[in-house]
Image (cartoon, rainbow, N blue to C red; front, side, top):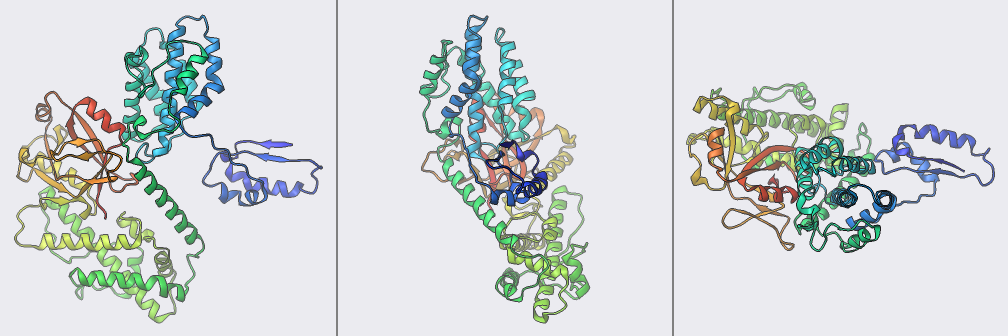
Length: 557
């Protein structure tokens, strides 16, 4: 028998292994068996499809849950560790540190079941981290230097896997919550009904583990009870994306199939021209009409200069931002419209269809946004949603900037989902405020409030509406509160007033309070962050919302 382990580390070598197997298949002696082991690897089927087809496959997945994870850890090395420290110095503290670390390790591992609200992605915490953490705790068991323990765990052990700033905040809160005197002395429970064991024998540790529920409730991780709705939606979306990927692999990029285009491409064209007509967008004049060569350039996203409305240069950063948004809309509108006209003509002619048009049309067949369009604007994933988003955004921007009665540079309130680059509005507001106050930009700090009366009503502030919140809910008094199991995954956020104030003023407005940073994302996948809103709250409240994965999202519905 021959066993090759950890093939997930060398997936690109699998074709050579396949050739070696085929070359020695007839030479193999009776009773020979080849065993291959691998952890889940997304590209394994790409390089080793034949090996998978020819093999008998056995999948092993450890039982989920904090309780089962702790049992496995103790059986692998925890029991031996407790026996080895019998009659040693600091025996009690070392045994308690062991239990505490294994609890912490199991907790952050099982939190991966709640991605992307629990963790943004499933981080690979390993037994190597556990052993390194135990070494640190052994060295600091006597002095109980919690600050050093938190720092080393964060910077050199578990924190090395976590690359997202908000996930790092979660890890910091867990370290602060569990590695402290109150937990070690038994004054505070690890969770309801579970305290750290006082005795050092193995049986006492296993008795404590037995009190942990078999089924992990979200509250064990500090997550809201209704997070199962988020998990189900995420799993459905992942399955749909996989089905779309399989369908896309069956279609050649460079083949023109008229019947397929009749079914899939023409409806996209009709959808586009119907949207253009119903939204009363400005018509392209004779100077703005693309020639056939111009339309061909549009497919490749060549630089275009379009002026559907008057874009007036301004020294006001907010006005400059809005003008830039309008220019983006104009460029996208002209580019996509030119491409749509060109595809329509190509279908009617049904001859001499160039490769760039075929690539574009086959993107329509797949229902995905062409790469050259997405480079200009990274909007929604689905094609129709992207087209609809382009038209509605450009329509709003055009009519707002060309309306003679508008005095404010930015609509009040404004919906961030109506912008092409919503992230830029915050830096523009900060620059504008710095000019008004005649102060350095770095001295200005963001201030957020649901109480519009407490905020300035001039050009130094904006009001944002249309945001959604996950992980918490706003009460009638515009205060964050915990969500119950029967509440929807998402809820509306009251209008938020945003301004930038001098740092000392910001500190004065939060006397007796701390601040909590709530991330703002473009979509529920939490892949693209716009930034963070700093809201005043106590330290304890902020830590609670951090563990709950509270975040704000643009409403793309």
